[in-house]
Image 1 (cartoon, helix red, strand yellow):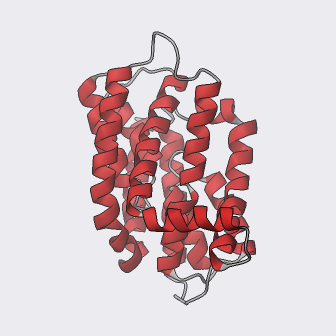
Image 2 (cartoon, rainbow, N blue to C red; image 1 turned 45 degrees about the horizontal axis):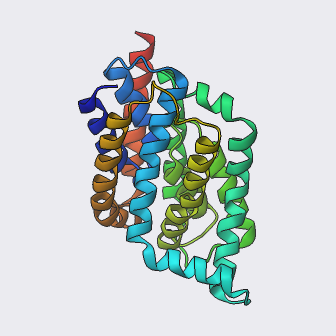
Length: 263
């Protein structure tokens, strides 16, 4: 993987992580444009590292919320912070289950699967279109809705299914306030990314002579810095703008990806 390619991938990840347009899907499309020949394992590693960078940028932006979650976990008192922390943990279970038991299958989806990305982007667009028609309320995330949102996040492991789009869209369809939906969506993914990194480290996934350390490092920095800017600037767009705009974008990019793959 070339250095310039890694930096561009990092910028793409940073810009698309916080919008409901599938950062993993865009990464696969950009890899295909560059003619990336990485094996699925290395391609997946690149995706995980870049997601890790934007997870760190999420922690920086939501540091007060993260502190409240940790406070709630270790106070062992039945308060709002503990309840929110337990909902975050509950939402993680479906994706953690899929990631643990189907890791090899997931890796196979991250290697030039542009046709799959295209169809999944169409599904993302449809979900966003339906969510945009739902009425906005002040409803909070319940334990039941946290589990359902967690299932949506597990499905969004597929490249092309936007994680934020799936979780925010599902939340809105459940009648949850859009701002609360966005906050919960961005916070629930952070522990999973750290868990994935820890698993890969224990499995030796980042060891060996074929790991492009310099390229991955520069891509990480690009994704982190871009993510900080995008998280500050674009989260408000996700909350205030109509999801239909992102729906149309996903339909267009998904169609282009399908045509590209077929032709």
